[in-house]
Length: 280
Ligand code: MLT
Image 1 (cartoon, rainbow, N blue to C red):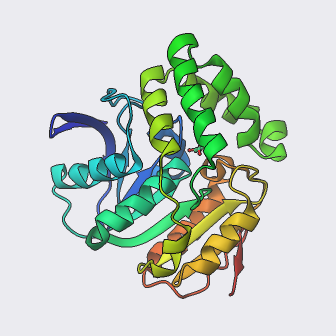
Image 2 (tube, rainbow, N blue to C red; image 1 turned 30 degrees about the horizontal axis):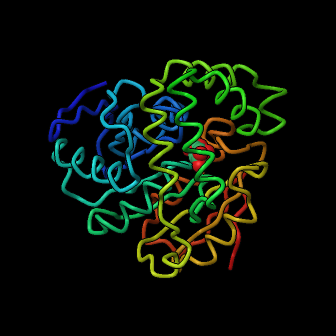
């Protein structure tokens, strides 16, 4: 893993392989290791950049609130720091997807394509935003135990819980080692993120929308609606997966991503052996 200091912000990242760059942006409150099932596979054909966002993994905490715009700007700075000038495919999961929307707004020229995994375009309702701010205060006072035990059961499909309990344990370990100050800063940032629903129809770049069939956080119904609203998009449901589909069913997710990467102009329908593509 390398660590870059850019504009006073330190960002640690995996930088592996060569070829058209793919930027993998993790969810909350995780780190680059959530892409363990993708990094080796994708880096056989692509340059894969998988950062720890500021305040997560090996990237130190900076600030007591980090907006989705700030995270997106960090990513653009990271690409500069790595001398990546050509457009990238940005793949973001959940909070990584919220950041992807802001990257697309602010750095559109740097994007070749978008992969939105298990994420949402809508902002938090006022009560949900208030609850996030309360959770931020709580984790600073009491630590992460309550947050972890509340979140974990919602993240996985029944199949993962039954057949791959080690995946849950891995995620629990990552969460436990995350700095509560980084968690609180991201919670405050997510609480004030913009509603991107109306902007979906104006998104210009080819987009792959991926969702775990058993995702109860960003449901297939919601993500199908998102894909329908994005002009140049492909929708794929991943079986035997919940909210953390890249970890739960890496083969199906990789199949969808590899097909998307090989036809970056989008528009072609994806039909993986294990996923399901929908023709609008
Ligand atoms: C994530 O997986 O990144 C979270 O579910 C995002 C959120 O809390 O909205």
